[in-house]
Image 1 (cartoon, rainbow, N blue to C red):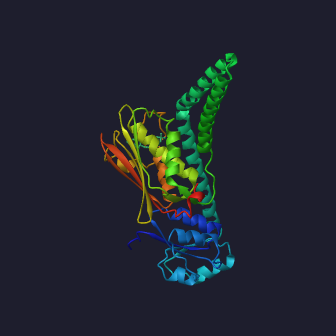
Image 2 (tube, helix red, strand yellow):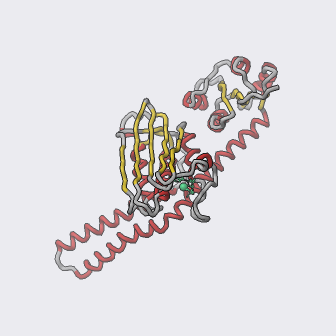
Image 3 (cartoon, rainbow, N blue to C red):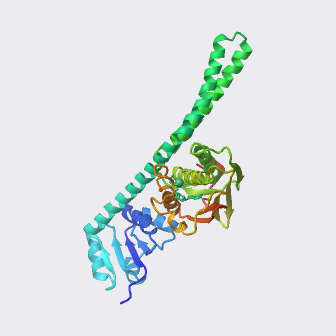
Length: 350
Ligand SMILES: Nc1ncnc2c1ncn2[C@@H]1O[C@H](COP(=O)(O)OP(=O)(O)OP(=O)(O)O)[C@@H](O)[C@H]1O
Ligand SMILES: [Mg+2]
């Protein structure tokens, strides 16, 4: 008998378990979620199903019998439901319920935890490579402060004293801004609900952080931002995406006078973000591999090869897609397309 191309999954129960299953399974290409059902119309997972455009079916019998289910996942933790499903399931459908369903729930939780750890460790490994740039940028204002303070110790003219005090204040503010950006970036992404995030604001924040990873001296910057472009997601994670893509672009242009172009546009209700460089490019046969974990062409100890893997994981979690277009010695463009975040107003953007 020919095997079905997709596992067609019906989820019964839209509480925390159903919600987590939706988040996990909708990312697996060989799985098609045919629908989710719950008696409680306010169940957490039903809202998520709407966002993911997965059918919400009110009648469990209809869900399991009329949509070609090959696997029924019961996450209600209700023994009566288990009995009901066994009594009514079509012969072609398997059921996962009871303790196997609980085991699956534990594995899903574990998977999410590992994913978060992976993001965090890749980010911290990246910050390690920023150390020289950070030290340089903090040392400059510190040297200035030292010089000014030494002058002040001798200065008798009150006007000059005031002027130099103001310069010291500005230098301290620059140093604290560096520390604030880095502390915000290095913290663990807060596990909050998705919020509207300003794409242009996050790109600019990412630029400030990526500056430490590599020298921007010889790089020309071009920005084409559509005002108000916003997406729904976790602001910390989106920042992580942009820092990775900008850092890669800058690394690809090392030792050249390159151009980094950042563009945002809202087209047909979708938010497009393009990050282009005029760097070394990616060989066509390597393109399918760049999103794989641990794929890197950097020297040992220079890159984890987890950057783009994490970028893709986050973009897909935000229901976006990422595409790459590259030519050897000409450059590379990464295009990200997200559903529009539809901000109510500029004030509410993160
Ligand atoms: N803009 C780009 N131009 C050229 N090659 C790129 C670009 N972005 C990614 N690559 C290629 O894809 C590989 C994987 O990128 P990824 O960000 O996943 O890891 P990495 O940059 O090597 O390591 P890390 O991100 O941990 O520093 C890179 O090693 C490089 O070969
Ligand atoms: Mg990288």
